[in-house]
Length: 637
Image 1 (spheres, rainbow, N blue to C red):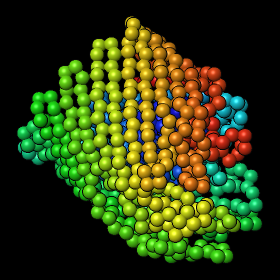
Image 2 (cartoon, rainbow, N blue to C red):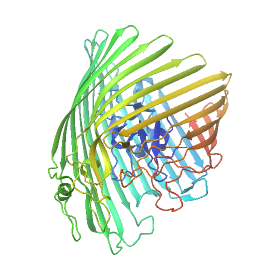
Image 3 (tube, rainbow, N blue to C red):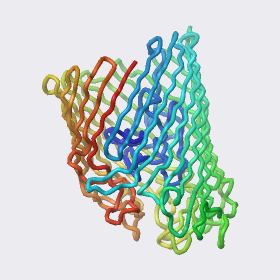
Image 4 (cartoon, rainbow, N blue to C red):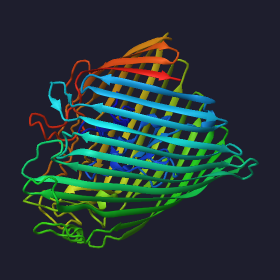
């Protein structure tokens, strides 16, 4: 069982994840991560509140609260808000028109042996004439797990949350809905971080209307929504671990507010969507420290996110038009007007020798103006064709991504000979120019799909070590900075499945990503290696059983050097292969038992993207869990 949504999503072919503990897996799509991926929970954008990404937005996502999770690789539509060139992860809820009348829902609960993970969740809804009310709750608790060599890995956490939604169906298949949810992660231990997170809370609210006209002409309908997501995060080095001489704490918030209005038009067979959206993300993080070990520390050491406000107003148009009976063309264009402010750039921390964020920006980059404005134009064209025996598509896009709060404004001043970590307020936005193509084939007993893509990036926002590069004034060899470089990424994904005999099925997938910093002639950091899986399943009416091989090849294209590179890759990892066993038993029409053994051979391994293990000097990275048995019971009503 996945410990959070990030770990669950990483099991999708072509998606990888990095781990720093038992919770907060940070996903990567097409070799890109963090804010290059849009995470949308039922129409609401969520951004984590931890500058070190203990709480990536997928960590607060509760899969039980929705009906499906969709992953779109690359830039496929202009309708989803500011461009996310890597892709979009969206938790979606089904159209209530398809709900059965009356009361329905499901319950599930389970246990996993390694780390003693216990979890339970519930979802229930009552429906009448398409209107509905639904509620959901989930709770999960885990202790530290052990890797394949029996080493204990700091990974314990507790998570609980819930929420509800009310929907009123009216008129010609129109819907007004109001939803809210609350998620808490408590006492999260991290082997791959200098602090733990005793508290993270995420609250999300959304009001939406989807209106369709009864006698539609050209104007078919519109949808409008407003939302807010609010994240509070606390991390420290003394609540859940024994501190050193210095105690540290960071209090951080990430508040996102947004709105969207879009209209749907039809001109014969041509469908047009016109609209606009608004998104504002305010991030604030204040760090405290005490050289004397005071608990809690009270001296402000850094305004890590000095009141970073990023506001985005976008307008968009997308057209779908049939070129022939079997060919469809999709084109889209959007313009984003971006405004950035750092409201605490002149706030002075405490302690001797303290300097403001504005002073550090000037020292590192020669830039002291923190108010920035951008106008970014993105677009796409995509052609899909049904060849009869198979379908195919080809697309090209331009996606412009503005720098996030960390890349533009993070501040951790150099101290005691150690390096700083300073954002670049004058950084240029990334311009991704992607082309991709793919085919899907479906036959009676087998199916296969493949896609290949290429991304030429101008002004890729690269984290690096300060060595006096162009635009960087500091040359200390230890501080982390952000600079624009040019880059290239490319990759291929292949998946296939074959029902080779009655009840028997075999499936396989493979994904490869290549990344190169063409400005500095070195590999891009944090690019996962060639990886894939092979699965064999036997499935009859009342039960099923199967085995799965998960593997990754050696990754030798790494940016490990702290002398000439960024040092953000920890090591050139060797490959691994892990075997899982799984099965299901339909105990009754509404009752199913699932179980299995993950990592049957108790293999010791780490994902290439996993963080450095700061607690165990015998290993480099945070290792994945060793052998673990699990049971889960599902009940539907």
